Amino acid sequence: MENEEVEYAGFWIRSGATLIDTILFLMIAWPLLFMIYGSDYLEMSSNSLAIGPADAVINYIFPLVAAVILWVNKAGTPGKLVLGLRVVDAQSGEHLSFGQAIGRYFAYIPAMIPLMMGLFWVGWDSKKQGWHDKLAGTVVIRQKNRTEKVQFSK
Image 1 (cartoon, rainbow, N blue to C red):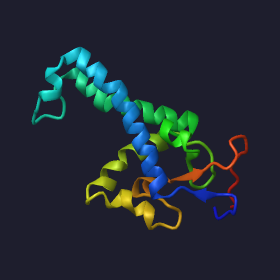
Image 2 (image 1 turned 90 degrees about the vertical axis):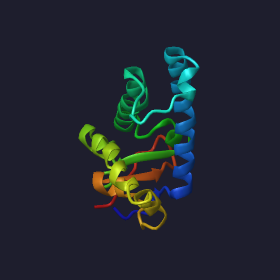
Image 3 (image 1 turned 30 degrees about the horizontal axis):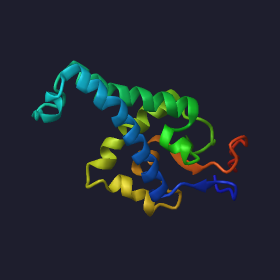
């Protein structure tokens, strides 16, 4: 897949995309959770993963479904798309399959467990792949021309 037309997205631009996605998510989640649970939600501390069913759906199920749908259909989350990045299959350069997108989402877990090393790995890897990318067979690339198809050499 070594091709001069492919530029892998590095750690800092991917971090910027994640920041954009996080801000957008919070702009959706906090008002919904506030409407459902009231102002007490912001003060609640719990040892459980979720305060209630709506909390679980909004904070865990919605991000999973949104990320998978966006990776499969648009090749990126809003933050990545705004910054001209695409998440693609590492071999073909095509959009991710549904299974590949699910695998990439859950591959963040082992990437984060050892002090986030799997995420920081993007800064050291030659193809700028985090562990989640390696496990799912994906790369994040800079899209030079939004109408051009990415070409990978075999």
